[in-house]
Amino acid sequence: MDLFEKHQLYCATTTQLFPDFVVLGGRGCYVRGQIEGQEPRWFLDFAADVGASPLGHTPPAVSRAIRATLRKGIVTVHNDWPIEEAILLAERLVNLTPGSFPKKVFFCNSGAEAVGAAVKIGFDARPGKTTLLAPQKAFNGRLGYAQDLTNSKLVQTEGFPVGAKVLRLPFPDAHDPNYSYADWRRSVEMSFLIWDKQALPVSGEISSFVYELVQGEGGIRVADLRAIEFLASYLRDRGILLVVDEIQTGIDRTGKFLASEHYGIEPDMVCLSKALAGGIAIGAVVFRADLDFKRQGRHSGTFAGGSIPCAAALAVLDVVTEPKFLEGVGNKAELLTRELYGAVKALSGNSRSVAVSTCGLGLMHKIEFRGKDGEPLPVLINKIERRCLENGLRVVHAGDSAIRFLPPLVISPQQIKSGVAIFTRSVLEVLA
Image 1 (cartoon, rainbow, N blue to C red):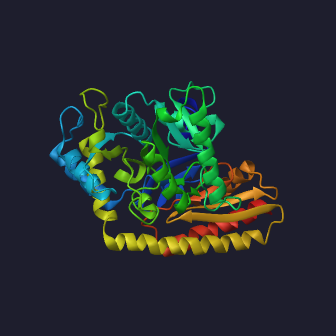
Image 2 (image 1 turned 180 degrees about the vertical axis):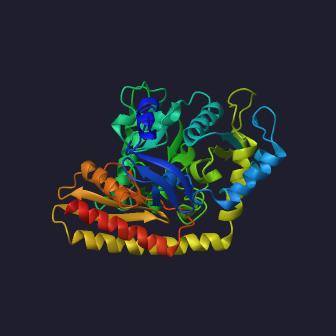
Image 3 (image 1 turned 90 degrees about the horizontal axis):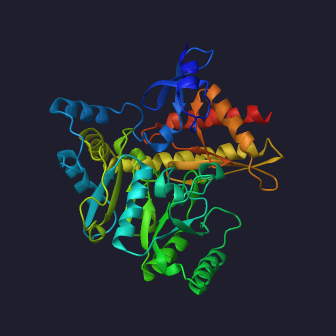
């Protein structure tokens, strides 16, 4: 029985794109994998493990940090017995995140756990406020309160009981040709007017607004700066906590350490995961210190804040906070943007039935494919992903109408050009 058969037999159905493709390893901006019936080979990675591998695969800085920790000795349960690496990482995160107010850090193991912890922090700090607020097409995870907030696709929530009540606001998609700030603002104000006038008003029960500034799974939708400025002020006036999900946008992905910095906001809480430890599982909530749990035992976790993931995260932060590194990310983002616009131009001239567009922020972009009436084309997206893989490029979709581009932050200019060229050729082959 080969690996492909064992995968089908023993591994649960999750979000695997293609069950006949197995990853065997990775170095730098490439993964070594095998398509069933073919020999193993190297694939240029434009997905970076959906953003979880910002320094590429097997990054030297992270590898060195892990080896040093192994020599020192692994320790695990920070939440019961504080661990050196976790304490040092908490200090770094407090100093790196927006806001001059006192902050603390809660560690966990994933993005969904981080969002869930943030929600619990809000509930605990504001007794009686048990309603959440989130944008349409949100994706915050598939577990607990994070799943309650998620509504980017029906399959992610259908049939699963809801734990918390969630109210929705429209997402201010800056690149949507039909978006109007004035219309969006009226919609927000009207929503609150309706909620305020209900027989049992719910607006006063809202604990936290949990949101992504660039929606990932929701389709790489970039929030309008003016709308976020208004929303931050409007919700603060109502006593609603601002929780920014930086799980995919954080750690230099958008050209700044956090996407929040583009918007000039100081969230009450920031959720981090994915890229934080360079491919090692970790999650964290950086939050206002006055929101801290008042009693021991309100929330915790066994593996949270272990020495291995925290050492890896410290190594990642050493790299990504160097000014030259961030400058390099900005230069690569400009190149990726130019290359993607070139791809859109080439593809638009070869199809009359498909509308092609691109947008994004930093090294978090998409190319979107829609029918002439604006309908999503999920079957086409799946075919494009497959052809890219066959041609040696790993990409991942965003929503049901786009391919997202999340290359490692260490990608070279030549690799950017090569990857976009492979992508363009693959799409043309599918459309032929």
